[in-house]
Structure formats: structure tokens, C-alpha cells
Length: 113
Ligand SMILES: [Zn+2]
Image (cartoon, rainbow, N blue to C red; front, side, top):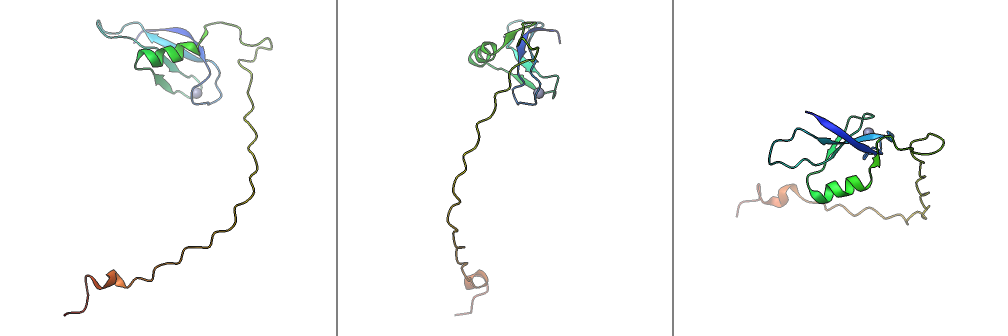
């Protein structure tokens, strides 16, 4: 279970940890491809890539291990979420009239011919 740390990313599920490790197994069986994965020490999630394209996306967002983040020492600036627009309330929809069905519509216990 040996692995090496390639760099750091913000937790992919947004737990707030900004330095989740991007790692690569170094003891993969011969003939098998090792793809990088994320391990977040904040929430414990592991996110494994399974192919070249996924690995490329992950590595593209990975910052080098030990790289400075921001001058203030904050790992990454927090990008505020867009303020949700306030939409006017939709007009009230009258409830659909319920069908007044007889019990099984007489199929099971219908009157004899
Ligand atoms: Zn996390």
C-alpha cells in the first residue's frame, strides 16, 4: 500500500479541506496502470481515477506539494457562490381533482353477470 504524494487539491466534495492529497500508488502490480487518486484528510474521502482522461483532469487541478497557496497563508481564496436570484412566486396551482374510483372499479368484486 505504498504511495507517493503528487500534490494537493481542494477537497473534491467540498468539505472545506483545501489540501487534500493527490497520491499515486507505487506498488501497483506489474502490468497494471496506477492512476492518481485524492485522499482528503478532512473528511476521509478517497476519489480514484480510473483512466487517462480522469487522471489528466485531476493532475491538471493539482498544485505541487509544498507550493505556496496565497500570501496570507490561506490555502485558497474562497469563491463566493452566486447569490441566488429571487424569482416571483408562481401562481398557485389548484390541486388536481381526485378520481373517485370505486373499489377496484368492480374488476375484482364486480357484480355477477
Ligand atoms: Zn474532504
